[in-house]
Length: 432
Image 1 (cartoon, rainbow, N blue to C red):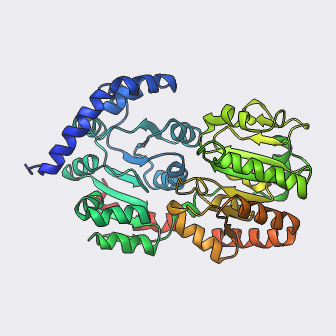
Image 2: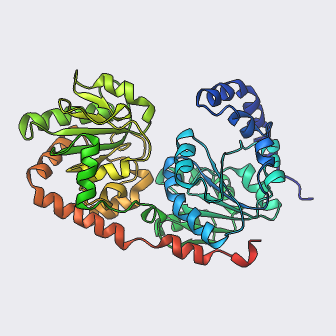
Image 3: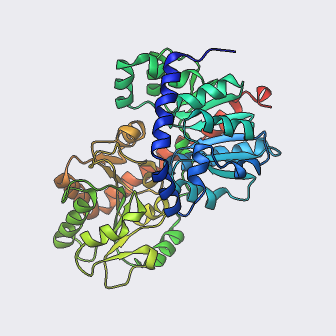
């Protein structure tokens, strides 16, 4: 039997102690979020649910909402190819669990919360489910999982891998650790040539660049009637709209919601007195907090119904609507980019034909953000003043906004097809 390296044994000891010490907090969290079995399942202590599932299927892991959206077309393609095998989908957050449940339940898929990277939990999962194939979407790499999967001879693939500039710098300091994170995968499909180059810098040679599956995960763009119907259902019929999606808090007065509210107020004062604002926080549970930031009697939470006619700020505190809601905007701002959270997906508003603005921190989406800028479909705004000036220019010139939006839609449609290419390249003869 292969001897575990010293570093892996030390890693397991540290992670195991941390898991046991934090057990009460995970228990409270899982109960608060309405899933009382999550803590035990993650630690491998309550495996009744695992034992109720048919073994020998395909295990797909997606970290959170963004990865789940990327995973949906992959899972559907796997389902078409492997009609008889179960598919286990593990996630790390309640929002991701809820989204995948709504989109894929009833298609031969079983939704689970991922195990912690401690030896006994991983062993229970692999002993019980006995997966024939492991597929990791984008990120959430754990050396314990991957080592155990490889030792059992389970084929594994990393899809849509991205190595950000920040991660690349860290790997330069610890090249051995960075190499280990990727070395146990049989195949790696990267998002871009830049990611391929960074992978090769680590000494990994089994990567391939077949495109970015995020382009395939985008919903269909709204047509004119669908756009008007959606505006009606939101309570925004006949109004011009600024949409700010996936926003984050920061220091008091400097959060992205604070900035968006001030820009909206200036636009109403100088250009569009009836302009409406949609704020979609990355964490939908922050609806009440954002309500307290807005001007009195102006804001409304969508979880309570459509926007009343006398109000102008709609807080989109629900999951799964943002990608389409972008389509009702004159301009879309993508958050996590003025606040330092590495940005979010700018392709969703681009496919809807809406000009896109984002801040300077788009590290997690640097390639699509750059492609959109090169196509003339998006702009970087470095601060609140640039945000306001760009919004004002685009809203005062609808023809310019339409041209920018059209370029973004063309780019998104032109880059689709990665899922089909990747599925065709998987080693099907070795996946039993």
